[in-house]
Amino acid sequence: MIFDILYLITDRAGFQISAAYTIGAGVIGGLVAAVFGFTDWRGIPAGTRAKRVGAIHGIGNVVVVLLFAVSWLVRASAVNWEPSVLALVCSFAGIILSGMTAWLGGELVERLGIGVSDDAGVNASSSLSRRPTGRARA
Image (cartoon, rainbow, N blue to C red; front, side, top):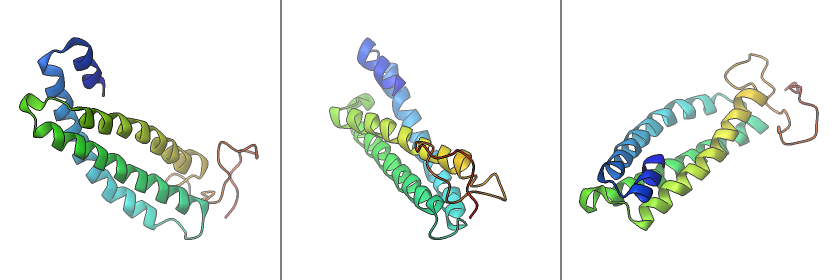
């Protein structure tokens, strides 16, 4: 996104190429991370808040990867990786959605203790709720 913004401001040719390469690397990295995330998610007890949050987090990240993959494919078909409106919309939507899924990942680790605590609070309330912040026992 930063390279796209720099390209839109300066109209310098190197920025859209840099954006395309970083998007490609991000898509590959996202696909690799999905394998490990899915493995972790399968280990969360069924019927818990953590399982639901993890599912939304994972599905959201799949959508993020798809948005960036579409952006990359659209750019790849253009001359000199020139980003079209569709490519830019997909990238900016991906960034916004990734912020939301990152927060959910933070909930999984910090609030629910998934992956960091043997005493994980898999049904702890949301960090946005007014309930006490201590982890609830499963």
